[in-house]
Amino acid sequence: MNLYRLELKRVCKTRMTAILLAIALVLAVVMAYLPVTFIGWTELDASGNEVRYTGLKAIRKRQEQQVSGTITPDVMQEALEAYQRVYRQYDASSINDIPVEVFYKELARYQPLVNNAKEAFADPKTGMAPGVMGLTAEDMQNFYSQLPKRLESVIWLEQDGKPGYEQAQAIAQKKFDAVQKPFTYSFGVSSDAMDYQTLLSLLLTLLCAVIAAPVFASDAQTGAQDIQLCTKNGGLRLAAAKLAAAKLAAAFSITGAAYLLCGVVWILVTNALFGWESTQTSVQWLFSVTSLLPYTVGQMEWVMLVANFLIFFAEVAFVLMASVWAKNNLTALSVALISVVAPLIVYMVVPGSFGEWLSTLLPAGGIGLSNALMYKMISFDFLYAGGHAFFQADVLLASAPIKIVLLVGLAAWGYLRKTKVA
View 1 (cartoon, rainbow, N blue to C red):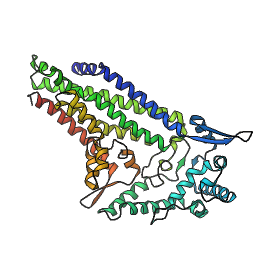
View 2 (view 1 turned 45 degrees about the vertical axis):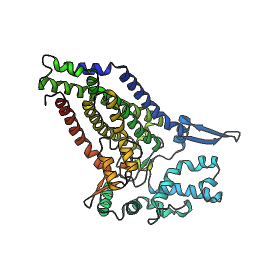
View 3 (view 1 turned 120 degrees about the horizontal axis):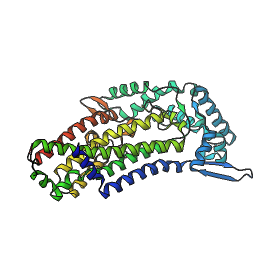
View 4 (view 1 turned 30 degrees about the horizontal axis):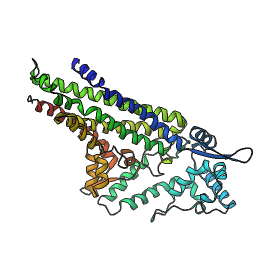
């Protein structure tokens, strides 16, 4: 315990650690606020002049006007009727033909519902969505019964021809059956906001990798490791094992606490800005009517925090393992930063199934941008092996604990090996 406290104090007292932790906390607040600035609302004042609102004012305006609660087929039909009435009035072929102030006054509240209805009734062969006037009241009444058919067509369009396609379709249908219907909706937290949670996860991982990289490497660089071995008990296996455990525990404590604190701050600030009512919204309204996640927005925020934390922990374990073998801080830091972005690079440049598997199985697999865990959870990305299909998000989550145990063990073994007491 004394060694743990000493290591904790040693890492925390460095100026770089303090700076990086402060940056991480600021990033959490900034990443929560930025999506707010994307929200807009337009209306006419008493004089007939157009007034544009952005940010928090726009959010409050939208919440006053927006449809909220359980979205039944009758509500869907009401939304379509409002759209078609305005389209006929202005002889419109698209939303661009509707005056801006009319859109915000009469149609904005229904926009998510109509857009999702168009997606649900997209052509099963081409994926092309129908126009507003191509939908009927009967379609709206059959909205929820149409969703499994839409899911089947999407899987066919994206996965047909791949070995294990039928299994992929069965997995997707089973997951979608667990989604609660009818959906609920309340304007607030947007898909942009969830994108920023993913981006925050990447940035926090980069910052914490910088904190963890010197934990072992700094001793090798300064010669402190040799001094420790020359002390009375320094060369004993038990003493070396205790020191390795203390260093690992201190690094995990600091980076883990920083990650969780910033993640919780992001959730609290985001929901305070957008309104806590929107946490009851079904995630299908944010991403796609066929998203496989059985969560509300609020549930998904916490699920993503915990899920990304597992992957983050695996990456920190790899950084510490690399730090054990590094001869100086620069080498350890270089390896740490490269390992964080490696899954994204592999995902972008290595084609085919091999690239997908490699991106998934790397220590930081699931942390990134287009390859991030959240996008794997809301999309239909499957990995194929031996004629079997595996939902990629499931593989990422199932492999994370295995990576953690393996990499922590290798880091401890590497330290004992390097200090000649293994």
